Length: 273
Length: 288
Image 1 (cartoon, rainbow over the protein chains, first blue to last red):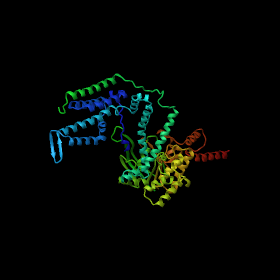
Image 2 (cartoon, helix red, strand yellow):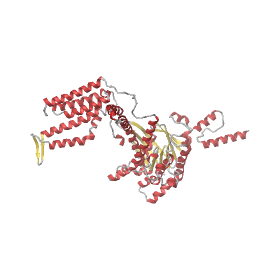
Image 3 (cartoon, chains in turn cyan, purple):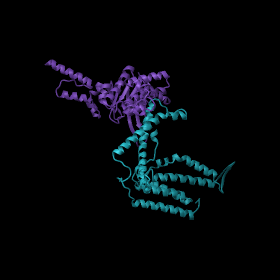
Image 4 (cartoon, one colour):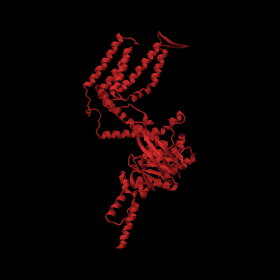
């Protein structure tokens, strides 16, 4: 049950997207987001959709889990669509009933907004979370933020904390499962009663969980100490990241698309084709 | 005394996904009531899945589990009452302690059963007695105790529910010999005095030989052997075949026999070994 919660799902693979440098993937994601927010006309929306479909194809990811990633933001999508449908004013009135006015423009805007959000979520998750292992991701972040070391920001420590946090999520889920089972065996009931009762029923799970987390953190600190961990200064890495030709090709294409969208916005500013 | 029977029980983890794994395959077994049964098996043979099925933490994919002749999943809403009748002590139970005092922690189960205050107190002191927890610990925080003491408090917490069947998953794992003896001895005293059906999962053949009346051997998701402790350990070849073993002392006596010494073959505990050795020496002395 609790094990079913998926967090930052990484799908191991060996596609072109998987092989991109994590630093470049983070940069690409930022450029991609800019690209999505620049899109304003029908042609650029089509281009945006096409880009996401292409990403999905070359990443060789299964379609189902990618689509499942949209589920958590379904509320935002529906909310955006409703707001746009009812509150956009235009020239082509479609429905008029009491205080409700629905314009063709509203429907179109709602459609574009939904498309934009879906593309944003699936595009960035294909580029980053689905195809980059958490370790690579934190490595990438660390190296991208490396210049901040100049102003005495503890970049390495920050990324180490992040890797450790990510590493222990599955362990904690397993631990929670175990403790919940143990308390259930003693008659705990987590599923019935009022909200307050249920919250109270969680105390016997949370306290042992806190205790064991602190113990685990202490053990880990000792283990790191034993292996002479002294933070980032003078530390070399087993896997050093190197940009390859492929990374620059992707960057080039993405920047080109951005430029394309700007040009389309200027020369083809139509909403309907 | 309670009766626990499994009929054609199968359990599949993550059914319907690529990660599907059959943990139990068509298991038919009846646990003898009023005795201590030892459950042994190689890692991954399905022991832990089995014990979680027995008290309704997992629902069988197929088949039924009968408690006193009644399907425990007949009324899924009432599964908590099954958990009161079939007490389960999980592996490393000391990590489930959470209350401010030892007394309150042991009382957690009985309180969930909505018993009278006096009854709860009575049960807490009874359970504490069997687990060797003296009065001076009652008002201490469970987090201030040693590992072995914590373990005993956690076991007492389940015993205090007075289940008809008590299941313990590796109750003595990771303890020193004295700690093992205290816990397993306490469980045996509890069993002998209350007549509860007890099922112990363990990897230690020595402990099993000393404390269990019956043995169930699991292998590859099904029941491999079941019978009296002495009968099971007499078949050492069959046990070794599935990656298990017989107690060290049994090996020693076999070796002694093969060297031509006149000692009995089926010796499983150190106590009986001492007796057998003394007897053999006496015979020899008499012959001289």
